[in-house]
Length: 90
Image (cartoon, helix red, strand yellow):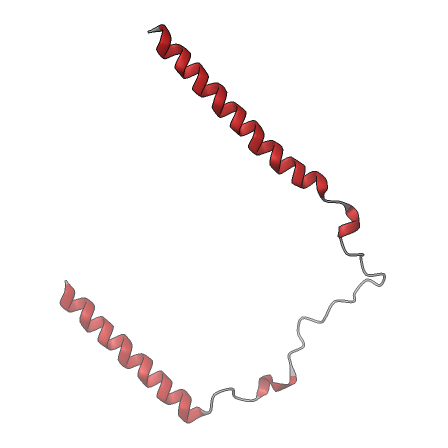
């Protein structure tokens, strides 16, 4: 019984040692980071792009209407086939 207790203490000590090494490795990486690696802040506040402005080509349709209708029909047919297959599988 005493040997079992010693084995458990040894395992606990090994686990504690491994965790110490793992946490030590993470902290050394954080310590290597410096403020010199970060970019400088902009000198003028408000230099962000306006959120409400859209690109000029947003008004044009990307897909022509006839191709869009064809794609929508193909997607609807695929959805219907999957619904029938799911119903048959039950």
